Image 1 (cartoon, rainbow, N blue to C red):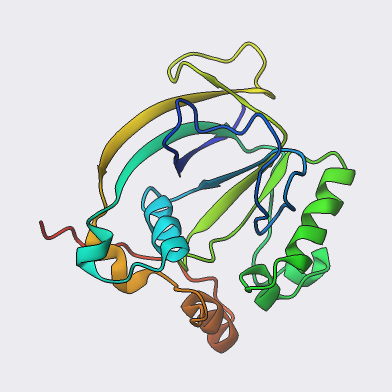
Image 2: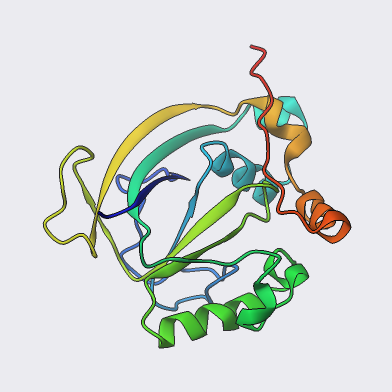
Length: 202
């Protein structure tokens, strides 16, 4: 039986999937390389990513964003999970997985691409205690409740919501230059932390 995970992404376009090479460099891609897809495995992950990228740390500033959230059912049978505990087996350190220097993680992604891997799962730098899903190559949206004809290229995808940011997430965003509390917890206890989302108070 195929195992799927629901993944989430913010994208203002008519599809959340990259068909062309990414125009800017990311943690697991260089600019104008083959398409690299970034998704979050927690529904609040895309909010944290947008806030970290923008640096808007106040509730007033965060409230100016309007997000288009997408959900996708992603096949994960062939996806390796990289975490702080096993990072060294893949040639990177735990710090490098969520660090500000993208060179080590770009090289990590190079190795996966060369080996023909469809992608992998890794810790989120923006929302500690959650994971991100990285997929290589273009994908196509497919109706969410149907089984894809070509499951390697077609992904059941739906436009899930269009809304402002839940500001309760602000204290949990890992801003640029800040420490990563899940990494620190792993150093202290050896445990892989799991984030517990706060209640929505509005």
